[in-house]
Length: 178
Image (cartoon, rainbow, N blue to C red; front, side):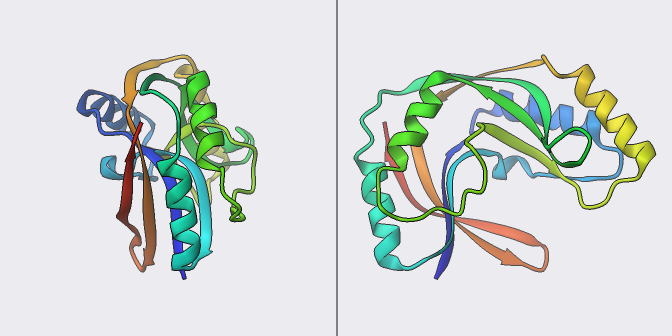
């Protein structure tokens, strides 16, 4: 059984550099996501066998959508700015919703627990003091509309996430061009 997810990788060096800079600006003692792990998750699956992985891959291969651009803009927090566990950069594109919908045209149950909100995770937080939360909330508000640039989306990947004592390692299972 494997933990897998379909995603759009962020591979543009200029965008990655801008996101890295904002991570450094926001860093008040938290662990940022490494640049090579920055992506937009389309669907997440906790435990799939090989047959189920093949069905997801088939859906990804059947995506009928031309390449498109998505804007990376603004910061936000999940589940809310009053209870921050994830800080993210937003994604603006109507096509990303079409991509996510087509990627899900299979009969495998996902482990997505929330409505699809395209984003790039910048950092995860476990416990946060009131003073750090107040400061982080203010910093998020300050960068709420910041534009980080535009990314060309021309493929979607299926990745495996293996948990280790030091976090997760990703392994590409397949790539599907648009």
